[in-house]
Length: 237
Image (cartoon, rainbow, N blue to C red):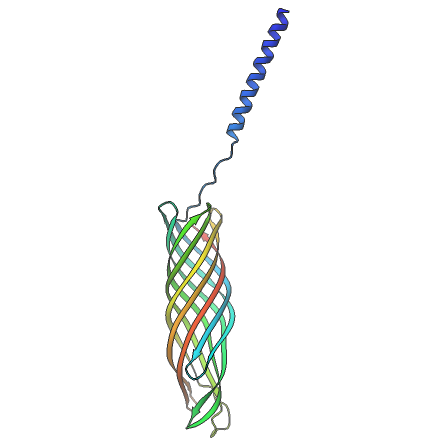
């Protein structure tokens, strides 16, 4: 009986030790809170998407087109007050936007049909942004700043005295403003992806199109606005 009692006490001790060890192991394996991503730092990346132009020349109505946009960006962010983020970014992209509209033009006092075309093959911006970080690795933001586009315009017409078509044209770089919103997601320690909408307004500008031989000119005023929706990826360092 004495031996059985000793064995019983030993079993109780072993079971108690095993229970304590199991509880300690469970405490060690308790879920650890997800570490919040820090947006402080600089980045470089690429983006692509679609753009939409909304144009108007004084001699005709509104006209528009859709196209593709693709390019790159570089910027820096600083996170403060736990979740707020300020930053700056520069973007440059190629665009396939080309808008056409038929119209009427005056040549030597005679009204003739025309085909006016404007393309925006380059789009760039320098912006500041303010955002708010949430859910550990997401950033919602708004931004605004200055923008540039290369504007190529031409106007095909057939002057009655010549009897064959001419194509006066010109290229100009326009400066305007931009504003937009976006959402960034940090999916790895040094990588993030972004979804953005941006509006570009280059105002209303006078233009002068010229055909050298024979000398034919065409003047007017063009209002140029662009909407862009893009998806991008950044490497952060």
